[in-house]
Length: 138
Image (cartoon, rainbow, N blue to C red; front, side, top):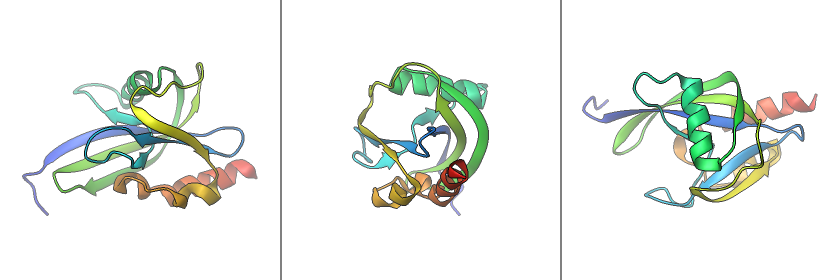
């Protein structure tokens, strides 16, 4: 494993609804434009993970979330950097989201999760997300 790669720590919101669906966003910029992800972003030095998630959701979607339990922590080696992604189960707490950085968004059921082109690190948690959604149904 390469140790000279830049390491980036991020948070991601797995936002669920009472309709047994999860919120997904489509990147509107950069090398991974058009790929789907769970919204979130980089953690600043010394910032608590939940604070980083609140800040990122406000910056990307102009709303707030209730941050729940950590669903997963993903380590993924992209070609140019190594990523640590902390994924938290969330619900929207504020007004409806406004897409400030993404080109599209949608609500997905467990059955629809695998129909999109996900960023690799996000794809790594799809089975856990599907299991979470199935638990909400029960």
